[in-house]
Length: 270
Image 1 (cartoon, rainbow, N blue to C red):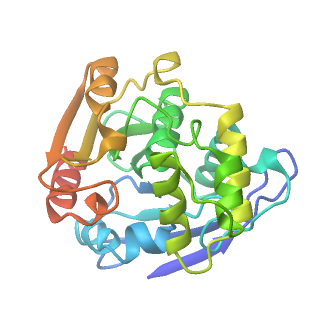
Image 2: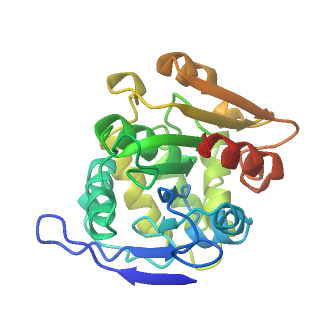
Image 3: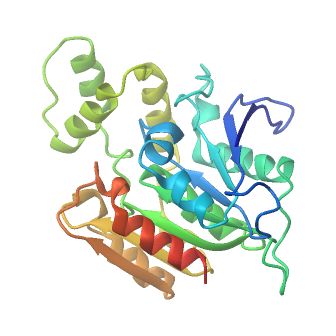
């Protein structure tokens, strides 16, 4: 059963993020295990990344309570006009508030219901890396899908993308063109909001070596995912990360892989 809700206050401001709480198979008392927070990718949503691809079913069947959050300007969340709402640091603060509102407790030895696990994909993996590094008292394990040590959004050619989206010349930069294509493929996507998020990310680019998560990590990347080609560099930074490669999968379709789900569920059960 899903419990959708919006509203968590950080510094007196309601970000109007869509949050869902999905209880495990058998109801809330089926198992006393820590919840799993799911963070979707850029230009996607919890519906696309997690519901439609079978992740919610796989995790709840394993007895896990699931929390999903649509990022600002994505899915069912609000698309604020101010750039600050899209900053990764602000999103991490909003996530912390959401977890407090949801009753997530600090990790406690011998209590399998304490803390939480995190599963992120693409941009969600970047946010998870930084959240885990700054909130080690809460995070037990993390699964990062489509991860990389670089920051494709920081290198995104905004001017060219805006021109192309308005019917002008096609984007020449291949990576920008692919990200724009993915964003335009999703019905209902608010391109102006997505561009604001890119602006915010450019002001806070990903620097994984600045703060490294201390908990065990599972890094999962498609064999043909050039955005995740630097996943081994993240694994080396961590020192306690496992790396799984999905044969023939790309950045666009790795999240739907059954092997990905199986590896993640087994890793989080340890």
